[in-house]
Image (cartoon, rainbow, N blue to C red; front, side, top):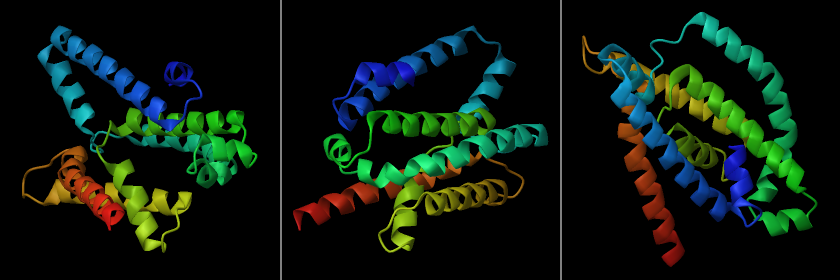
Length: 199
C-alpha cells in the first residue's frame, strides 16, 4: 500500500487506482506462482480462503480483531470527518484545509482495517462495493461511515446464512454468494449512473 501511494504521487485518485490495479495484478501473479509450488491440501485451503469464508474463523482470531479495532476505529472516526470533502477531489480538499498528511492517514487506516478483515476471512468479493451505495440509498443520499459499516456487516451475515442454508447439505464460502449477487448489483449501479448522466 505504501509503495502504491508513493508511485501514484499526488496526481489524484485516478492514478492511485491505476497503480493499485497494476500492483494487484502483480500480487495475483505471485499467488498463482505459489499455487504451482504448493501441495494439494495446502492449495485447497488457500483456494477456500481466497474465495472468502467465515467457516474457519476462530474465537482467537475474533479477539485479535477486536483488539485492533479498539485502536483503529476511533482513529478512523477522527480522520474520516474529512472524507466527504475528499470526494470533491484533491485540489478542492486542499483548498478547504484538508492536508495531504490527513488524507494519507485516512488511506493507511482504511488499508489496515481491510487487511485485518481479509486476514481473518479472506477477500470476500463485492461487500465494499455494495455497502456504500446501499447505505447511501437508505440514508437519503448521505454517506456515513457507521451506516456503510452496518450495511457491510448485514451483507456478510446474510451472505453467510444463504451460503450455509440455501442448498441443504451443502455449505458454500460466503465469497461465492456475495460475488454472485454483488457483480450484477455493481453492473446495475454503473448502468443506472450512466443513464442518469445522459438524462
